[in-house]
Amino acid sequence: MNDENSTEELSVRVVLYRSGPGGERTLICPDSEDVLDSSTVLIAPAAVPVAVVRALLASEVPAEFAQDPWLDRHRALVFVDGRCRVGRHELRYHEKFGVYGSEEP
Image (cartoon, rainbow, N blue to C red; front, side, top):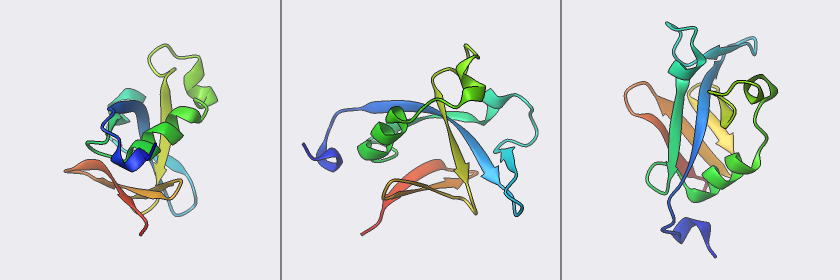
């Protein structure tokens, strides 16, 4: 089955981080220390490709999230200059539009 032509709707919960010049991670919503304020749900195929959601679902939940009942199903995405790679896909983050996906040609 070709993931890109699938009409199946899948979702994954993610926490969004920015990577600074020195590699330090900060939450995408810097005005809040609550990790959930920097979280979102990625839905495929509406916002991102199905392959992105499947790859994220197949990845491990970060150890810092695993013991928290609010975060134990979340994955982490780290954006560098507004971009994050998941497999052959590039995700982008925009403060107004949120996370959206594109595929390398």
